[in-house]
Image (cartoon, rainbow, N blue to C red; front, side, top):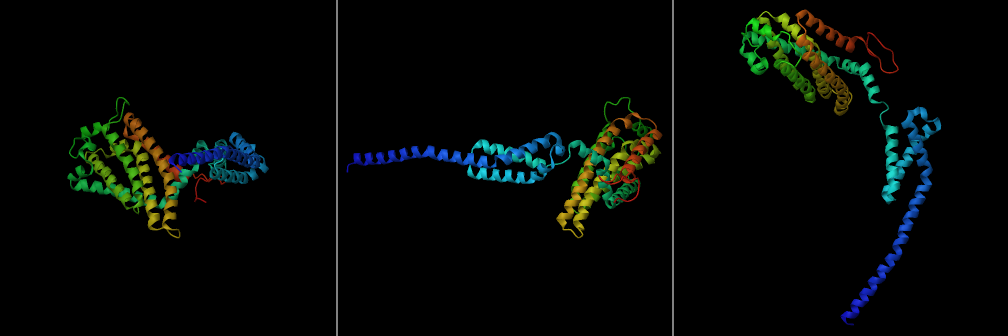
Length: 369
């Protein structure tokens, strides 16, 4: 057979193949369409019922769903999820696949999603959740408080022995003229009120920035068994002790305490809680007890995270106090009054007025249930 005949034979064979494929293709498409329709019709009733239940829950929560539908909801959800898995494996039509994906996503949110909105969660956080988390860290708070007081005393004693320690602890930039040997008049001028509330002084901005950084680091470094958190508290409270010595040496200890107390009772309290939160995580890893290290750290992390959310709120309040009352309120007694009111509020909120968990009773004192 010549080459011409071979080409004709190949062409005829290919033509036959293409013709058969052209005839088979519509049949395959029709068969797939029939399978998709049959799949949908067999299950569409359950899908529609599930869709109706989800729509009612989205409109009015559980109040809009009767008992039978509520009991059937888990089964209907699992049926829809199974249908979605089959649809993905068998490549059913795109419309059915998209419908099932949307339905399963909505159903998952209603079955497993959060039961509370933002405002309900915030109300529970402020009306007991935060204070309970703080009380759960009572031992860590006591340890952190001891370390902070010790750091302040160490800073005072170091500068009292050698004033060069002041520059190692504070630094000239943060000191802003408040240095050993400064005159009483110059130091007293730094405590005077501002004529306007147009901004923070350089020292106020530096102090707030420093303390906010201390709070975040004190918490973040807690994973190393809490030791870096404690060292950070010692170092930064030594800064405060050094500054207190400078004003005490000039006979302005009482005035400086009033100037600091307006925002300090809130800001230092927030740093205390942040350090305790970091220490709580580290201590749970070092002494996990009956639980494993990972389980103990996870539980401690959840409690500490609630405390740290509150620390953010306290830092915001401290910033507002630092920007306005501290700059505008004159007189040490008035400043002590403001600082004392906020300190009494925090102590009462965390340790005296104990709001029980939902379903419990409110207590004004005593131990938590």
